[in-house]
Image (cartoon, rainbow, N blue to C red; front, side, top):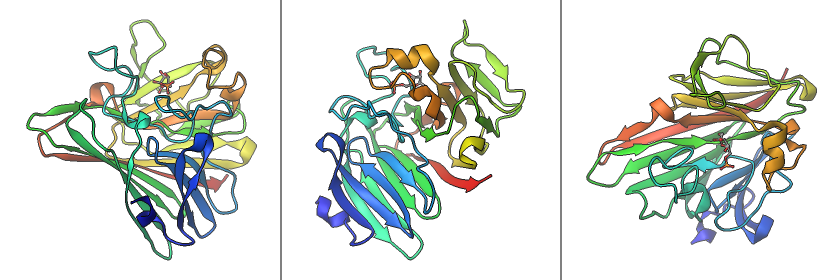
Length: 289
Ligand code: TA6
């Protein structure tokens, strides 16, 4: 079945870290790698540019463990399970081997769709579509296959590669409201200007459909993240102590990445009616400053 998604010169299946299979997408000098485990986009490199996504040198590639870096898919819940502490943080999608669906290649784009194989934990279907062109477009499509409405919180928990966290800023969320997850009582605050980083940062911006931009003077580039079907954006950097406490995150690696996550979480959690479908899309591009 997996052989059917291969397109000579555009999509081929390879064996990567930990012996895990991934689809290598190519298009006009750009490339992307999509692991079947977690339907995890781990690598994206536009033509003649540096990689846009970051991956930890200590990432595990083991069943039951999330890959650290790229675009982990958090679904059908974001963060801890709402009521069952025995369930894994950020849901089950990123911890599951997905099935190849369809693929196609045109002059300007290479596209692949993967399908979540299903789970007794949730009566819903999930597909991921990745389109590589002069941008990277990633869409999670959820369909409620049951007879009852279901809550769905989710994220494309994207780790972007930056030159130095001290030097970058994130624009686009000015005057947006956010939940500061690190302050007592997790207050709702308002973002006064561009986001800069001087300590551990974990903010859930809510009720926003804004395009975000990571401005990186060190790499002389900006990374633009447009979105659709998402009303939350999570901005996260673990900083020194939290990075040191994570076995799959190098002690100094907090310097070289920032997460800008396309999400629906907290008050933006969806309620999906029986038979209803919801699509959430992130479109990523990098350009010179
Ligand atoms: O998006 C931020 C966050 O929710 C943080 O709380 C931190 O836990 C991060 O996700 C990474 O979570 P993970 O389960 O991938 O280690």
